[in-house]
Length: 281
Length: 313
Image 1 (spheres, one colour):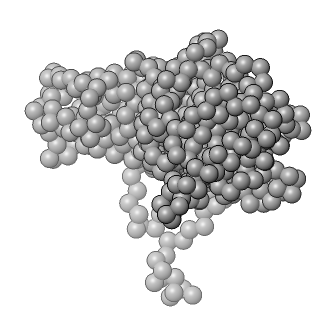
Image 2 (spheres, rainbow over the protein chains, first blue to last red):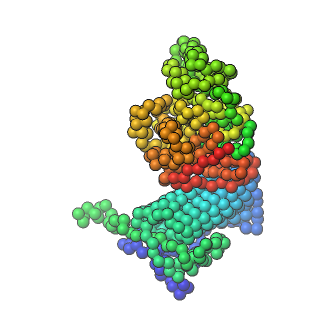
Image 3 (cartoon, rainbow over the protein chains, first blue to last red):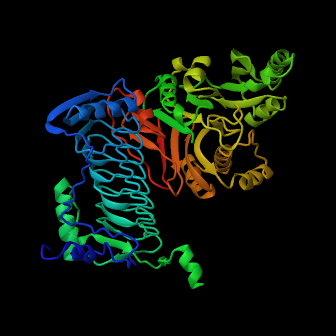
């Protein structure tokens, strides 16, 4: 595995095989996950400095503002007590940060983040991690539907079961589901990887453009243009390292997982701009 | 959008279901601020005793004309008269608002005949008739409705509720949820979603003698379940067939005298979070609603596409 270049590894795992004419900038997936995104204007935080916010009598907006205030003071390890399933907590954090929620989150938790490592000790409602760019979100219990919608990077992990449409419109990053997932997971997936250790519901990977879905349990049905492809040693090795990182067990071993990719029979693109099309026609 | 909630205590009577459902629905206010409705189930009336909940006007009607207050009063008296003419003996009476009435009756006749005779009066709508069920709905949030109708002191075994954001019919009590599965006593339904085959199926059910009191698509669920139960289905079978029968996106909760059930469409497009323990089942569109009746975190999960679940108290 180490002998291969990043580009070759990416191709080997079937992650990028589209033929581009040059207008699209192609970014290759790194199996080492070594990219590090840091904003020049981000707060200088120290992981050894810790702070606590009691959300008992605060609104979602107030909690998010308090997180920001602590980061401004250089606090790099923040714990939120009593989140009580409120919506929209921990969103828009574009910074390195260790953030722990001692409880459950409601809808749209931890969306639009770029960099923090978040640990949620309860469950999350719909659309957790939507549009996240980098970092990690680890959920100890279950998650609702549209988990990781349009995620672009980072790791989004749920140890329990997840609802429908997991990773809808996924554009990058890794989604890991320790249990089962519902209908239409990976719907219109474009890039990235999804690992489902349990069963997957109906229409898995429906209309996916690209990306890879690994399933450890039974697949109720595949969606339109989603096809199974043989697992390679590289797949198994990457899956093992990724799942070991978060201590997620697999029932039958990573080598026995199923690999689902796009059949690309629905690809009807050309690379011409509308003005160029006119010239051709 | 709408928010729905339900809870059932297992092996327990006299629980604070009125207060609990009020808190759960208030937490869902942001999903639907137009109206709020409750179907609360008591431990049950004595033999042949039923509670009739009805309204004789809409809130908006009270702003129409100089004589409207007298008209509403006359309708209330007329409704009482029709109860007695039908052979029902009124043993208790309350009027939480000018336009809403609650009557405890002693009655052993046909429920449909009674309901039809009452609704023959202009402006009168029977919200529910039940041995356990009491159906209350009005404009405003859960706090307002609960306070107006004295629901916080209501004791019983289970309840369902709804906060409505009107999308396809008017903001009025008629279109608010829950819906009673007329003419079956003690069956009520709340729904979150849109049904796309409402008019087709409504026409079919009306041809077969079923009555619709509103133009709200959600009423179709109550009428369909009533139709299936009339044909001999049990609740769970009726609900399972409804998942195929109904087209569109939906999650609904149904309650009977001693049961609570939920069903979700085959796309799982509408939310539902469930909590299950040996003593209590609670469900809602959002977990924040369930958290209102606990002072600690609880383990919850989402039911999957096409799933039907039923619990008994």
